[in-house]
Length: 298
Picture 1 (cartoon, helix red, strand yellow):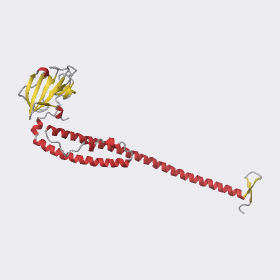
Picture 2 (picture 1 turned 45 degrees about the horizontal axis):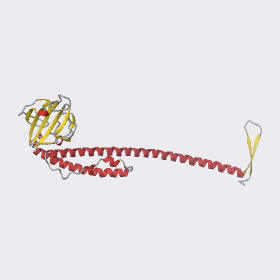
Picture 3 (picture 1 turned 60 degrees about the vertical axis):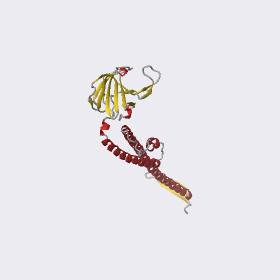
Picture 4 (picture 1 turned 90 degrees about the horizontal axis):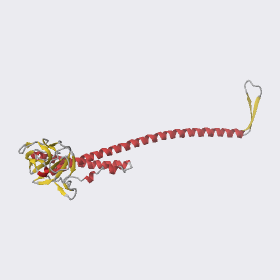
């Protein structure tokens, strides 16, 4: 019955006559099924579109969170690296103070291998869980090194209190501001340009008239022209330490005078044998020249 023949009459209002439409039942059923399928497909596509939109939004949010986490990890790595550099600087300062005061190197001191530049080990890590694990291990080493450094600093402070007079006589500051044009040790002679000689101190270049100060307290033992050294000053700081300042324009202290750390003792010049204005600065320990950088606390 459903698939029989149908006769459909269509009347239009206000117009005479009618239109006849003959249709078999199976054709109507086919049209109904087709329309139903199209409606169902549209509903499914609309639902899929909404799901895809939600997934796209979730993906964008996830990528934003991952990017924020990555920036946070990089920032944390930079902060850890800065903390490592600060700790290493303190350790170098500790080592220099111990050297100045002839103290034994602390056997508890850890090497720099345990606190290497963290950025070099972090940057190649592409997976965040590996980065987090690396940071946790690094923080543990940094924490241990900080505790050891705290103990060493306490030991060093006690030694400094016991040796206050010794520290006051250490030439621990730069005698003049300028550029180090020649370091301590063997070098090619600047006067002849050939051969090699042993340079007993530092050459610190600056313009004529730049003030030269005493790097530690002591007694002036010499202030006069001294051959190739030109106008020179020598200070005895006690404990076997003395300093020499050469090629001065002029000196402002006299033999036997007591000077304090930072007091002006002369001015940079070009007296004696020199190729330009600079201060020649020497440190002697029990009469033997030593590298002034051993004592300068930078």
